[in-house]
Image (tube, rainbow, N blue to C red):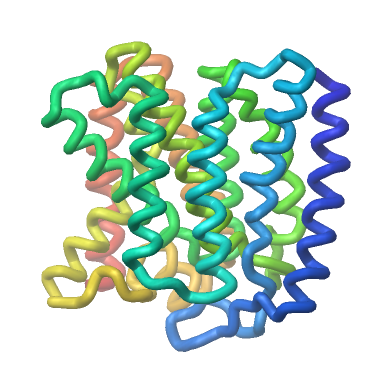
Length: 309
């Protein structure tokens, strides 16, 4: 395994350096606006390294007759990552994005076995997966949060599912972290990064739930779930368009209005999710659900105390 990890590191560094040149040449830049958490123009789309490195390394393994990841899964990742990168470069019609997302999720359900379940389960699962992909993208708003949170999620899934070759995603995250987890980030992941990561994570969680016949694995995204759902509910209460960019997530308020460092806030979210993951794995669904409830209560108390809503 170590030689492949070494090759992945070399390829990842080459890929991201090449991308920086391309992004500068074609001005793929995230310019700050009133809803942004950054103050200076920053390269966008650096998260392209996540799907590219994962796909390339798995194709190499297939060529060496050591592949263990479905090619259809890789194709779905290519579809959803590709359309997300295109959207990073040039804003697309929501209908085009939705079409690609739906196609990729159908491939996910087919490969994980979800399409063989009851139609109601399929519909609920479809809504949850599409929602989680978009929520993961919306949560990517400050330096380090997607990187650190994904390290926890992907690392946990690698521990549970070593056959999915998620070590190559971890390599990509470590390389990207060098450029992103700092006071002034060199680059942001962009939609291509957050959407690709969420697709990989959602695929693995769906597969785990089908293989083990246990829904507890959905809690592996519990912290993001709490922040996303509660924020959506508050925005609906204020009659806001929930699909438009905003700065009302708790993590945004802490980083922007309260002046807590981006890396500090990101670390809190990642470590909280790590603690929840340990409870879920070690003590099962009941204790995991209890821990999730406690976290949700703490989250609500913090929002109320900060008079965020």
